Image 1 (cartoon, rainbow over the protein chains, first blue to last red):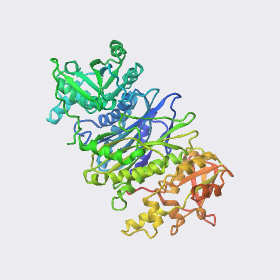
Image 2: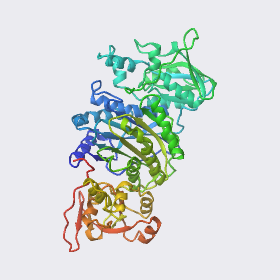
Image 3: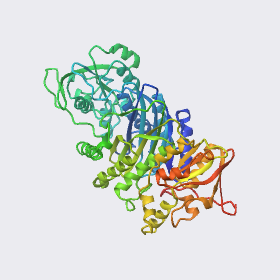
Image 4: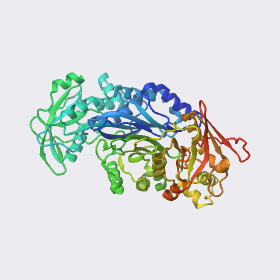
Length: 315
Length: 315
């Protein structure tokens, strides 16, 4: 664990964090951590920064939620590749005003790591003007699932119920508490769908993505990478109570998984029993199209105008 | 490459960066990058954040040097493990005031990556209040060298000539240009000693560290991790022109390697011919000592008081 908080205080802070993580931290204290990729598996890596006032606001989340959310967001990228988590490293930039809350932020990171069944294998701590949490995740998969493999005829599925984070965000931006506890929770305590991603990968998922920018924006990424036309039925979108179908298309930071799967390859009931989460068929891969495109249709077959992608709090 | 600079501008910035990197960037654009660890090799990972006003000052370095230095600092941790680089991911937090210099920062990152013979396999870009560059490095080694393996009787070696970054920093802090171009260069354009680290590992190095906090502070880490007493001869320290032996002990961000090696295991001339860099025996591993300790002696055999560790610009 490297560090630049100044001598004494810096080592104490790192030691306290590592002690707080207990068995969740492993191998910290050398120049680098050493991990093993199982034979026949490939290494999958991703990095994700969460920055104060860009990705989160202190007044809307507890310090532990901020730590957990930053970690979940990174782990969700492994889920989208159908990978198992091997470990994470965390680079923290900690302003003086955040030092009293550092243990709580770290506890949140630990919670997300424990939920994913993985470990913190290294890190870096520095002072700075605003809290930022950069989580880099390492995973392994025999056959990582990219965004680029969707095949004509595949079904398009999405996990869970969409819209909660957007409804919660709207309430918070109006200065109100979200009306439903489920919306609040979906926003403040999202879950990385690692088991779900591996399950879908094992059943032959051809393309997968986690819903971070909003379902419409993320499916556009899949359509572009795969060079296909995706057709999604607006009425089929699984939604939390109070969310419109358009909310479900626009809501970001869901960390649900959207997957293209060969027809007949998944048993929805088995998935739902295994994960206590819904799995919903929302459309099909219609045709190969250079550049790719997403078409959303309403019940009358009319084409729906799509919302823009989620852009965090920046404008 | 994930991002949160806002739609349009954000994608344009990421695309421009990736285009600028050319062949140095590979596999960017999915949720995660996929890499292969050669059979029989272990995965070595480390993360390192460089934050404006903590790790660097804009008035002392060009934007390209800032990018290169942040990347070199992270790659140097692989060198210290005797690992070969497999790839890096970069998380950038870019304030509006830095956007005009972003291409130059990225070019510097590319230079360091090219010098290390590796690739940028993923990243993340966000807005924020201060420039920060978090580089996470992945490498492989059949037998990674930690700080913990030093054996009684080993020789202690260090690569290169020490003191340049400290002399340059002192001049810059006085508002002057460093008197020697070599000091300036050692400070502004350090090199990650990846080849040197692998060479030393292949010859049986038992413990290794890169000199980032200052030789004395870093050798203390090795002594503590290995549980040994290291004895270093002050007069043997290899120094740049103008540096005192104490400067050589205190100078940080050198990215030289310090290694413990079984006696007779290295051919200094062969090393120096291979890398055009000096390799100097500076001491020995004297005894096993619980907790470990570093003793530096002058020519008369007297014990020298040690400088504190380098603490970047924070206090």
